[in-house]
Image (cartoon, rainbow, N blue to C red):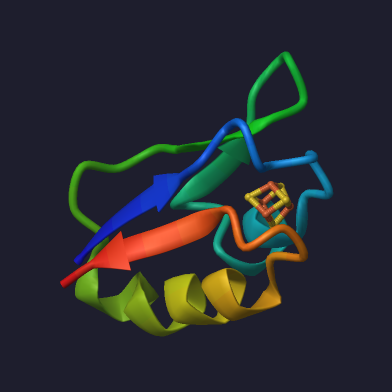
Length: 63
Ligand code: SF4
C-alpha cells in the first residue's frame, strides 16, 4: 500500500499523525506529509483508520 496526503486539503489537525505516527508527520509548515514509500503491512489498518478519520478527506491510498 502507498499513502498520499493532498497538502492543499490538509489543515494540519494532526489526527493522522496520532493514529499512524510512523507513516504521517506534520511538517514545519503544519501540514502533513507521508514518511514512507510503502506502508508497512502492520500499519495498513492504521492508515485506513487515518484516512477515514481525516476531516478534510486529504488522505488517499493506492493498493
Ligand atoms: Fe491533514 Fe487530514 Fe492528517 Fe488532519 S488528518 S493532519 S487534515 S491529512
